[in-house]
Length: 154
Image 1 (cartoon, rainbow, N blue to C red):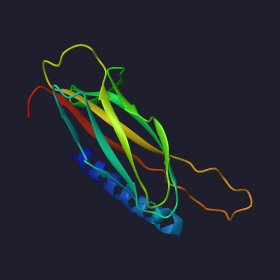
Image 2 (image 1 turned 90 degrees about the horizontal axis):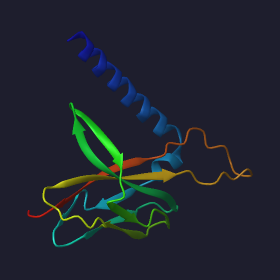
Image 3 (image 1 turned 30 degrees about the vertical axis):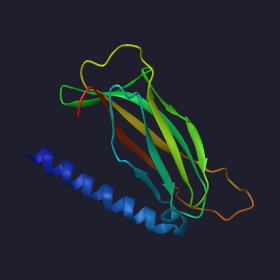
Image 4 (image 1 turned 120 degrees about the vertical axis):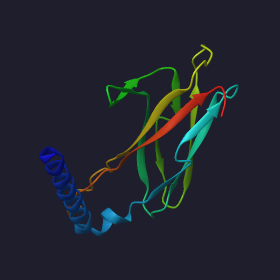
């Protein structure tokens, strides 16, 4: 049990450090991206669904989108590259206070017999550095992971 309390202490310290780092720069807190839905269910015979991204900040945000097959092996989450499902577009820039839609499509010809699970990883890409601009300090880039399920029934 001592190992568990050490992990809890480490997580608390990490969380407090992250909050402290975010509070250092006013620009770091300006980033705000919302997703809808937060998990995507595609029921056959449909082969595609969509996720809407909304940039709530005034600044543009650059994103990269990747999709992986998602499973659990021996209690550990496993993400494997896949060509069965695609996310389009794979990268984008969303202007400030604008929305964008990502299409997620199953392109495998094999029929669905059981639920298939995937994860969409959405990574913020760093903005180009303006050498004439002020020093920004620590810049935290965001990553989120949204579940996607393809199934024959609800």
